[in-house]
Length: 291
Image (cartoon, rainbow, N blue to C red; front, side, top):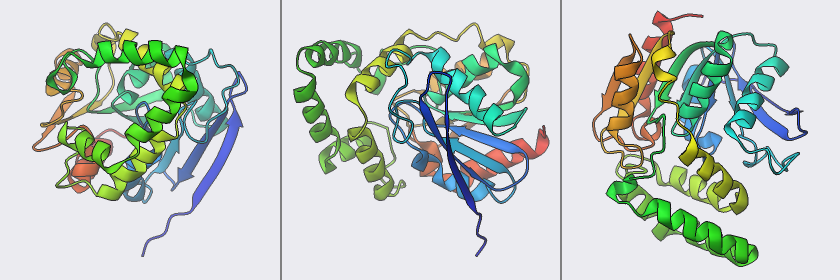
């Protein structure tokens, strides 16, 4: 069996937040960026596959898992997240890389391209969006008002709501509901991957989640899309009700020369539903577009 050694490390960002990262393999660097409240396990199929041919870099976003405590609790803006990526590449002595972003990882990479285009060789967006995806999420208009309700209640009783948050997320019913709503394809995604995700979300600081969620709602990267002038691959899950196809079609329409892949029966976590298909598509894209 082919075995790839894993290098793990942590560096202190400019505000003192420890940023945890993992590096596997050799070759052109490929940086994988997950979404809010996600974790590196979302990429485990891609890590295993591409570490045979690339230097695969994964890391925890600030405020997530091993990238905490925050050096400054106020530093949770998109600017702060992007700065961490730039500093990570500097720390690893990498001048340019391929980047793949899932969900909220997509707007993060758009902002990275806007502010630091020279370090971005190619872009891969999986079930991404460029502006607030909350309205109409899951086919309903209830997520945004529910968010503001929870935020207000949390400010009144943070300890109680943190406990409720953990109980609500880390249980089998919530996991099944997440799949049924289009977050995962329950017939294809390994349930252990959903369990790992739920436990990771439950252990995330609720305040951090709420602040980042509002950052997601306020971000608007539509004007960045037409400026993207590098090879770009857009992957969209047919049954994704979290960030439906219209968001990815907008990417394809506005990024000249971009490639679009629609994955039948794919959920919001398409890379977990159909890893072999996704890996082949990404491999072909990277082969055609070396750094």
